[in-house]
Length: 77
Image (tube, rainbow, N blue to C red):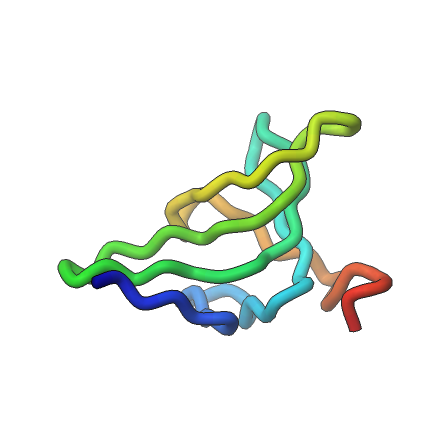
């Protein structure tokens, strides 16, 4: 059974905590919710967001995301 964690450190990048904003090229900006770690070690970063006006839940591999300087989105602190 995969584990879900609310904090995840991407090697060479910032610590992701629930509410941290990140972006994915050509996909838009997302708010981190959790990371899923499979039994084989694969990780999927899950967040809510996307292009303006088209919010949706999405999961991405850690190498595709860019963590923003904004630590947390307002309202999630």
